Length: 91
Image 1: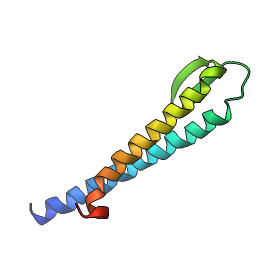
Image 2: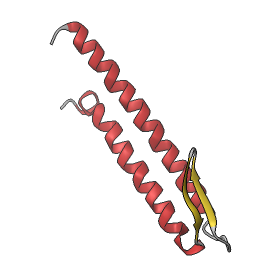
Image 3: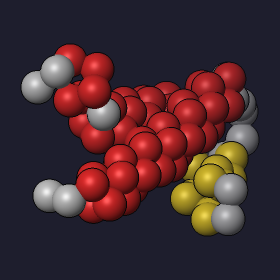
């Protein structure tokens, strides 16, 4: 690869890392918010910024939704670090 292509790939790699890590943080924050609502007594509407996930989530299902957000945060964090694994670990 020529030098310009390497520089472009580095830019794409770090941009993808940054975007995926930001999405991971947003998922984790929403997971904490839903986890803190787990003691609700009435159905709760869960919105993930611009998208409405559930219009009336029953209180018994809130823990499942929180866990799903934490799993999504973990998966996007792993995907983000996959872009810079060579830089971090040398492989």
